[in-house]
Length: 263
Image 1: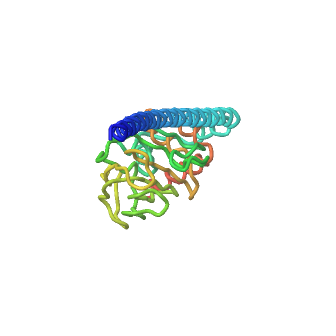
Image 2: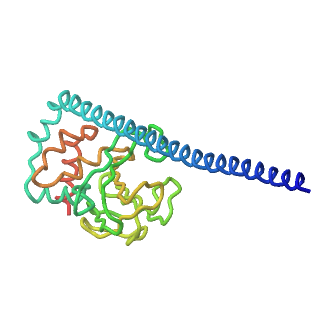
């Protein structure tokens, strides 16, 4: 009996030792797994930061290339655009009429550009695409104003192209403007708007990575640089003629003057 009792105690002791060893090993594995998981997550965050930094560098380079191209183009075509000043005399009433007919000024009270017009790495698809407008920083619910007289030709609560809630306004002489990622629309298709009319509120709808207003300007269905028109006003009136060179400004201004005189 004593021998059996001793053997039983010995077996229990061995079992306890093995149990303690296995238990300790399991605890060690759990700690190791959590540590490894934290390390992987930290490296993943680091890689994401590095990728975003590279994307920002590429976007900055694209912006610099676009700016350089503009400088070169202006240098080549300045003599052509000088004729506007020589052949077309504009008084203050003419300028006011032109600025109300063609998109001018910002659609927001405060202008802060977060993404320029031109080719860039798309923040969501991560592919190189033409950014057909500019992105203006704005909190959700910021007022949006029409930059010129016009007629609303699109007012959608959902846009399959990724604009979310959006509006398109047709202005005079072939110009159109688009407003994307809105939160509220205050106008309907067919509605006539004046320069400065409140048309809706900014938002974060559609393919958007944060609250902002996507703003586009087109002439004859062709995308053009919106920024030139955002900063266009009475004080900077003549600068547009040497910035947006894709338009035949002399003929356009003469046409507008003729139409104004007919009114």
